[in-house]
Image (cartoon, rainbow, N blue to C red; front, side, top):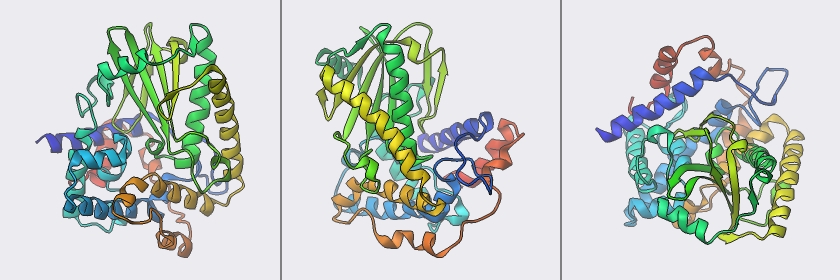
Length: 357
């Protein structure tokens, strides 16, 4: 029953987001009216992201056959939210080559792995997404170094959020969880802390990311006041109060080491430059080239799985469909939600995306 309830919960999360938000962002193709950046999510799904689930399912079966535990496999994913996009959402079923039984098996395996990667509730009760224990957070703080405090935190935090999230979206589009995991809020004996982990931003497919010095960057923010933040299972954020204005302290670690003041200043300059450069590089691409980059980056972010079974993380044949077919000119599926209430949106999404139907 726990598994079925969790599947219902993630469909509810997606339905709430779809019912309460409108499509925003830069235009990917003005002549056709697409408004998602850098490419429309359903096109990325159509040309390969849905098929990626079948490939990852094969990898998981091989890892289990090798005797790996769910916890060991979870460490290959590193973070839980990107696992959900693959395992618990089958993509549009009309485009999915997996049978219903295989989709269900993938979802069940993914759920068991996901549970090993969470601390506390797998359901993100009260909007809390926790992958560390409070004592783990306090140990990081005890060994850390405050790089900004008080009024100096506000503008710095805004810039970090702006540039870091822009880079992640440039690389992974709608699948932001492939490059960023926001977790917390951790309510400890010494205050409340929110953690932003950035990873897999050094894509080998963009010139503007190849020189990134760090593999993993961790931003720790001490928050106070009336600020409340909720995080659903797909990294969709809800805020009450002003997030940057509620930050009292900032810590920053890169590849597990505390940054010095000088290194932190360079990091701030680097992510600013990288946000601008990745955007400029992508803007010059054709629409199909943008889809290709997104697909390649998605496979790049799961290289831990392919490495574990001795496979290369990307094969040129994964792009066959993109290279052979034209861009669909059907109406964007998201438009069907315009003007609908939550119950109607939930019914549509449940029929299209629920892993057990």
